[in-house]
Amino acid sequence: QVQLVESGGGLVQPGGSLRLSCAASGSIFSINAMGWYRQAPGKQREWVAAITRGGSTNYADSVKGRFTISRDNVKNTVYLQMNSLKPEDTAVYYCNADVFDGLGDFGYWGQGTQVTVSS
Image 1: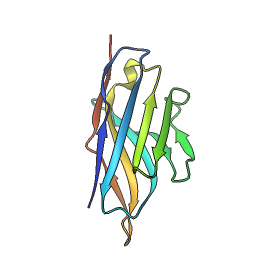
Image 2: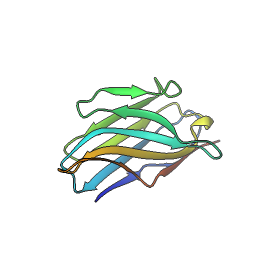
Image 3: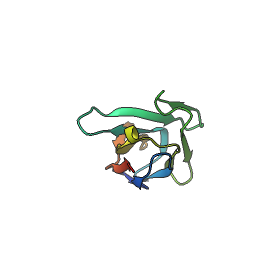
Image 4: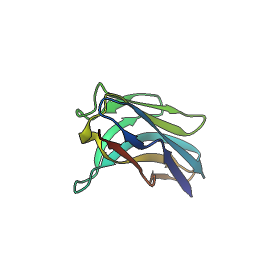
């Protein structure tokens, strides 16, 4: 079994910054892609950013230029640096990881961390 634990959420004023972390632990042989999603109240979960094991990144248009995804393959951790935050970034943020446990590839989700952007 694999667990993903997010941290770093909170309340921030518009224009501020937050850094989210998501650490994976458990039966991990290797982790392929990792990513971040978010879900605002009353809306569907949406993809935010993704990073491959080799470090290639992709971003949703809504966060491009403001958010940066990175990872530490030794620590099995993915990060999301969020700058110039806007009220519309308010959501629960979830990390996702594609984990190879030696037998097969499985997708795992974290429990989510709340990000609130408000003055």
